[in-house]
Image (cartoon, rainbow, N blue to C red; front, side):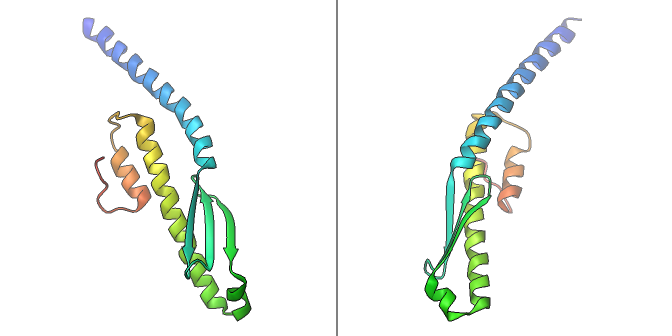
Amino acid sequence: MMNVFKDMAGLGSILKQAQEIGGRMQGLSEELKSRRATGSAGGGMVEIEVNGLVEVLRCRIDEQLIARGDRELIEDLVATAVNQAVIKAKQQHAEAMRSLTGGLEIPGLNNALGNFLGEDKPSES
């Protein structure tokens, strides 16, 4: 009977931690929305800015590039710049998630972050 109460106390502690993390997640979402990551390509001729939630905020294409009229080049440079910005934003997101958990060992977190970042072998930091 004593083990039941001990288990319930442990469960209560876990639930409290989950609620705290849930509250922090809402704040994290707002913080990530305000963070910025920029990707560029073609020596800065194309720049893409995203926020930490990986929402594209801005796309800048140099006028000289547009004047050339090379649609394929522009498309390639935009794709490259977007991918670069997304990678940076995902790294910011992963760092924020790691700091959010404050060192708590959450089963599968490192694997999930590695998958999110597209890493073959996620780091254990």
